[in-house]
Length: 132
Image 1: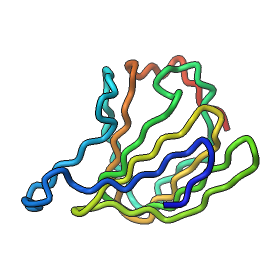
Image 2: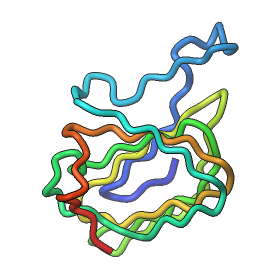
Image 3: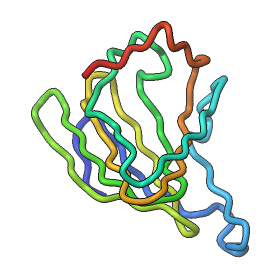
């Protein structure tokens, strides 16, 4: 898959390809953490272009898994390189996204999307490190 410096996009096949009635996927294998957040986003749900400062260890880097759905991913690193692509996940694959701090990114939800967000620290709305 196409990528730029500061952004990883991986299409992950199921770890149990012999039983696709209950596909199982491993995201961030070997990365220890304290919280996984499940987000359900309807088609067209607003999501602004933003970046993270890295003050929050969970956003350095930010780890997101598109479990089900279709979205347009836009990202821009500090070298001015851009990534603009449609990603889709479902029964046969999931999409793992990793954004380094300072990388501006946005998802435009083109269908109902189910997303997991991996966090190294519990979410604290008082100390957001997101900038627009």
